[in-house]
Image (cartoon, rainbow, N blue to C red; front, side, top):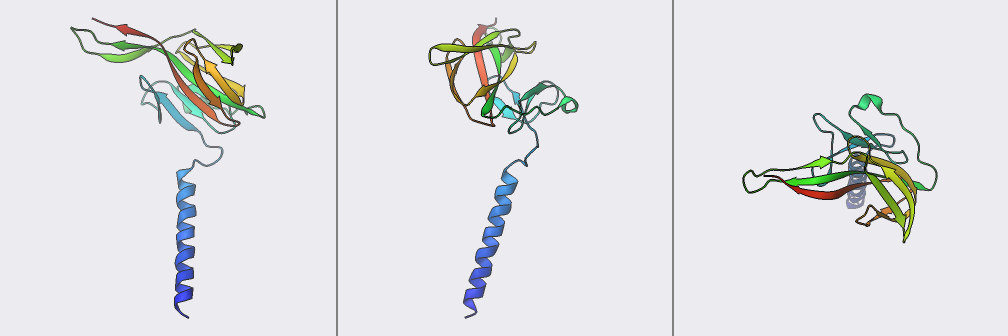
Length: 167
């Protein structure tokens, strides 16, 4: 008889621990998540100095240099968001090994569904762009990178628009 209450207490403890662990793994509602670009992909966190993308479920993403400016603007119902950067990848040459990237400011980025263009956005002075889109599958840029937009979420997209060899 004493085994049953002990097993029940153990099962309840495991369930409570599981709920706490899953709650810690998720970001609380209404809290910003930060991503910065590291030459080929977006990585979580803010850089020590520089530009980052602030993301929150149900909110238009923001490209900023400081948390002080963040003001949430809700996404329209049935839409998600796309944020990204256009960049030229730079490589070192024979004489000097180097790596990195150069953002492409004022670059027009075409967004299409099927073969039909639906929107053109322009990167800012730092090569970043952000826009709200209805849920669906889109092709982005001249490369036609396929992106799936889901309601209330933000998709981050690095768009390499060229390579440069340096010597």
